[in-house]
Length: 117
Image 1 (spheres, rainbow, N blue to C red):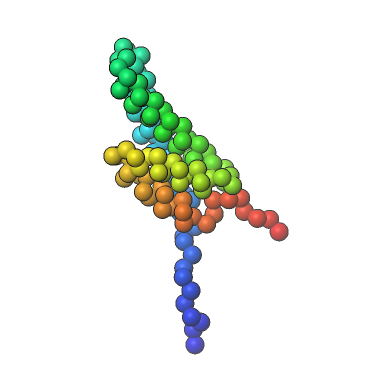
Image 2 (cartoon, rainbow, N blue to C red; image 1 turned 120 degrees about the horizontal axis):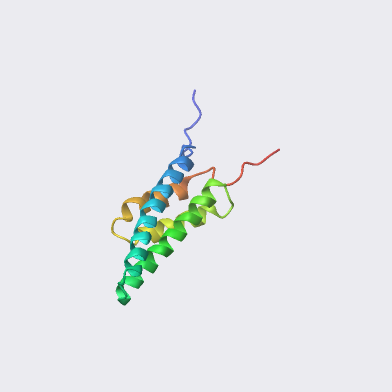
């Protein structure tokens, strides 16, 4: 007789998926931030341009912090990844990346440092 089935634990590959998704989000937001900075440097001094460039710079910084945190398995990496996913989801294109980041960060089991005996 088989024991009653228990819910399956999430796959250990979620951390790798999270790193890849955060790397893609960092690349995309970094490019948009770079384009914004270049636009402002070339004379686009409208407050809308400055706000958009600043918003993408903040999204880029959040994605970088989350990517570094997940890569080094910091204790705060889960919260940083969820916040980065929420922030990226506020953009139209970013919701394609943000929602999987949020789900993977919430379910990944191996984000913290492995415990030693």
